[in-house]
Image (cartoon, rainbow, N blue to C red; front, side, top):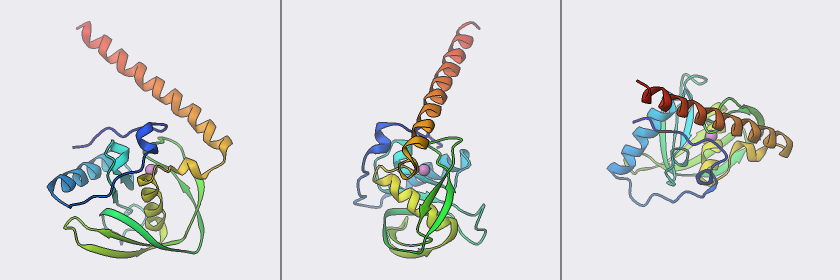
Length: 181
Ligand code: NI
């Protein structure tokens, strides 16, 4: 089931997510929800805290930019090495409509558990390397906006406030309209 994606700033997005102790059906159900939420919103990555679950689970699908890649779920991902540097214009499903250049490592090696609870290690490059860094950041309460200048961040904060107000007003209008039928 696609779930509501929290919009920054939000207290849950600032919290550190908890390590998954056992990879069971509840975790696999969470992964399914994450994929469905990510695809519905047209994203290439999503972290569990973004749908309000403070668990160390992320999903990635960078096929739009890397056709050779495949959809992936990572449980308890841990970046074990970073190499090189690059700058990428990043967006985030929790910061709709915004994108800013962020400095990242060009290559990331990540250790994680797959959906069967088996430990895997993967060296990533390109968008996948960026996405792994971006999504694991989410698990520690860090957003891409924390990597940009205060001025840019405060402008985005204002636009997100307006977006939240607009959404609330639209929801209220929907209720009023339905009540009049
Ligand atoms: Ni994000």
